[in-house]
Amino acid sequence: MLFFESFSGLTTTGATTLVGLDSLPHAILFYRQMLQWFGGMGIIVLAVAILPILGVGGMQLYRAEMPGPLKDNKMRPRIAETAKTLWLIYVLLTAACALALWFAGMPAFDAIGHSFATIAIGGFSTHDASVGYFDSPTINTIIAIFLLISGCNYGLHFSLLSGRSLKVYWRDPEFRMFIGVQLTLVVICTLVLWFHNIYDSALTTLNQAFFQVVSMATTAGFTTDSIARWPLFLPVLLLCSAFIGGCAGSTGGG
Image (cartoon, rainbow, N blue to C red; front, top):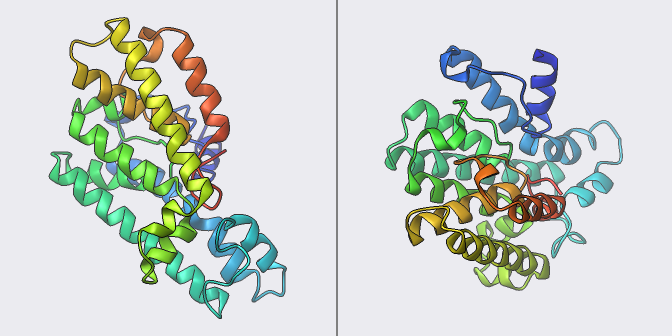
């Protein structure tokens, strides 16, 4: 069980065999969340900082991990510097996510743990009910937004940090397709759920649709409600969207 859980975390798969998370010690829960966080960007650090020192073809793996508009150009003269910058972006996003969740009312421990799993797009939670434990539309929205950010090519985030304008995102065709797919799925799910009167209000319907779509389509796997209540067409659609996943060079699957 522990072997499976560890590899699920390090590979940011998010599958789990543990039950009773609410009663586990915080130390175990933190270690579990931290595994996903290290797994999220570990491969890039390995590829661009360690392997070249060993004389292994790190640049080839680096380009495989960081395709898109910057794939044919080194982001820094030294690959190790690039790895440090990518980790800086990763840490800043994690801190911003944790603070946003804390300000939204999530306890500090849960905020840190869920920020680890969100930025890594892993899906581990500190509660059996996942994000649904908090029953907060604001928390749902914050997590979904940071999943979208982390589902983008980190090369684009690098460009922004290097002084480029926000237009660098929209110039990337993969980013446009990624956002377009998310918006289309949100609209479809919202309309179908509203038509079937699954939730009481339009805002709740939109919030649930937005969160579940982004969580599934980025391969995070967080949940706020049982989609067994949804028309069968929607879970199948979201399962198919997971095959697309996040952008290349992101922490998402697909």
